[in-house]
Image (cartoon, rainbow, N blue to C red; front, side):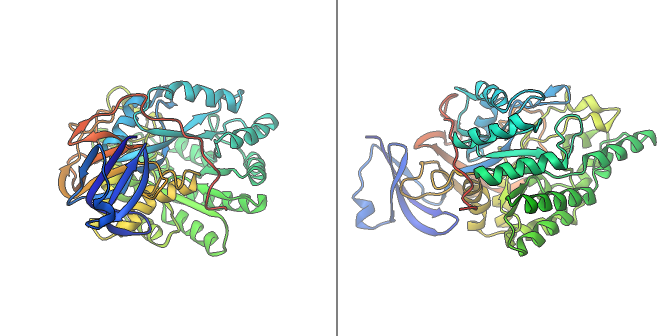
Length: 466
């Protein structure tokens, strides 16, 4: 029997904060007991970890990553091996990545391709969502089989005509299918057809710099598409989860629907909380580093996002981690912003940036754990195996030093990308130790894990719908 005791830390979950010791047995949490009590003192174990002065928190669950994703003639620079190792460094112990249905192919074909990419390569546990890029009778039927085997969420796009765009009828059909099989439809909500018109017009005017990426992808077109997918879900009698919400107007659409009691959910990402169009406008093509979709917004939008996280109109913070190197990848759009690969790195920085939000007074410590660990695990059928520290849960545990200071930089991060969107930002808080199913993967500023240690995790249906 493999036993570890973590002693002397402040255990923080979405529900509680308590000075407790944690007993780990065979990769799972076996028990918690108040520090200094006879119960805790009586535990014996092969390994003892001194957590004095640290928070003991659940490993992060990043429910939106794109490792090795093909996009615009290139592919995301993090592999499943490098990306999950970086996740571990940042205190994230589970990712949910997106398998992509090939146009003209089946869902199964896409899922098999992503299993091949990830199998035996991940440092932490992983699961998959399914991107539907070709909604038809066959792929609709396949949704039922995927839900039954643990791929319980399906992403559809109102953006990227000719690549991922589904029309309203296709989205409605997928939502109707999900209403029947218990799946959850996720949507990238921007009006892609209208955006393409604005892109064409901007280029014709000679507007080619990265800042124009944000100007053509208007907040109103995010709000319009958010409103539309909510109404389609209402017609289908289905839930909907809107990914990477960036605009105040889109948050208002979600809040209105939730006030009506509709099963409507939303996520935002650190880039929208901490960066803005000021970054997109950086000179000498530096703004290309910040090109992602939905785009960064003017700073005024940030207050609405923070408010949405506090009021639970936004439930989850994911990264949409989809890194492209500045040299050789982002540069593909040097003369045309529409050719800059859309995506930013972030899987390593999410837990730290959200702790900084605690320090800054935007959210409480328990809300930090809710939006980064518990809510994504519940939303995507992983709770309470993931997302909490409780008897029976996987021992995905992070010892977090809330007083350590660090400076974010490409020179010290572990993501396979040549820049940091947060270069030079000083933050308070740092991961000290990370256990994945009871096994240390980060210890004392050393990576002690290995490729293949992470396991594929089939998921249940969303626990927000039970």
